[in-house]
Amino acid sequence: MTEEVGKIYEFIEIRKLIEVWCAQKAAQFTTARDLKKMEKALSEMEGLIDSREILGKPDIDFHIAIAEASHNTLMVHMMTTIKQIFLSMFKISNFTRRPGKNKILIKQHQEIYEAIKNRNPELAGKKMERHLLFVESEWREEMNRQRLRR
Image 1 (spheres, rainbow, N blue to C red):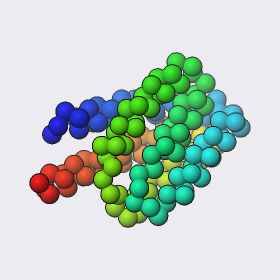
Image 2: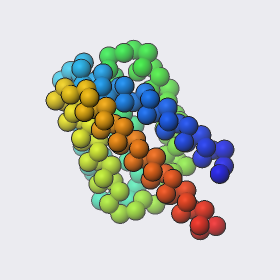
Image 3: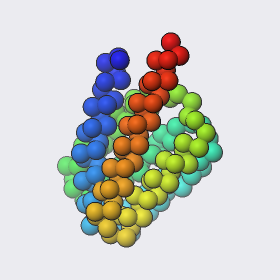
Image 4: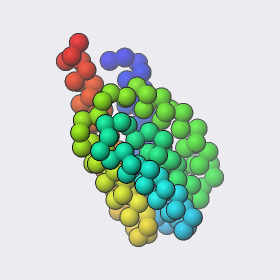
């Protein structure tokens, strides 16, 4: 396992810590303007629903919009800094997506959004955690597939 791949697992671990908290806070403090930003990112993701491309920028925008909805300035700075790691992670993971994967990911994002919109912190946190566990398991699977190909 390359050092780069190891860093991705570390990154996902940190995301689980930070973003579950962000989703919970967002469900408490979100405003109409915050929700609009999430909706914009979601609709951009939906444009890629049948594609095998990664969700990329709209995906990152969605997660940053959630951090912004926490209304914690330090968290917003942290997530914006993390954005670079996100981008390089997406580059590394730029393998062809299996069909239907974007559909699953978009549905997960929509569920997070709904929980935040309905001001349900516990559910928002759970949905975020489930999403990140899925991302982690998909990543593991892809790494195994690449190992077998070699």
